[in-house]
Image 1 (cartoon, helix red, strand yellow):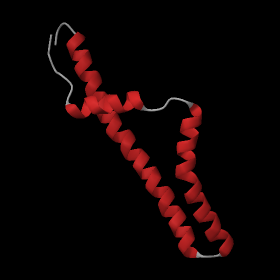
Image 2 (tube, rainbow, N blue to C red; image 1 turned 180 degrees about the horizontal axis):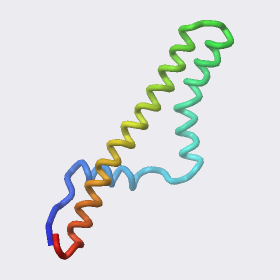
Image 3 (cartoon, rainbow, N blue to C red; image 1 turned 180 degrees about the vertical axis):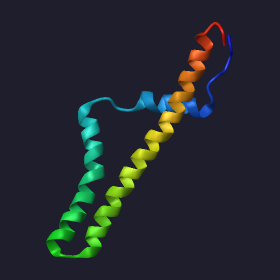
Length: 94
């Protein structure tokens, strides 16, 4: 069998996944903290007819969307590497 231990980044990522809260109220609270300020700025900008607040709301929402996408892409690469190493350990011809 091939011995390919996990890297430090992969171990940290798995530990972070283990520590994530799994309850729905904790997830809703996190989404609320991300979305309410952005939506509030955007709504205030629409109602007060101020372009600055529209832009701030949009940029804030865009920031969180890009942040989430980056985390998903990074996580996908790490999970893929972990699966490949684990499957290589279990296959008899590797």
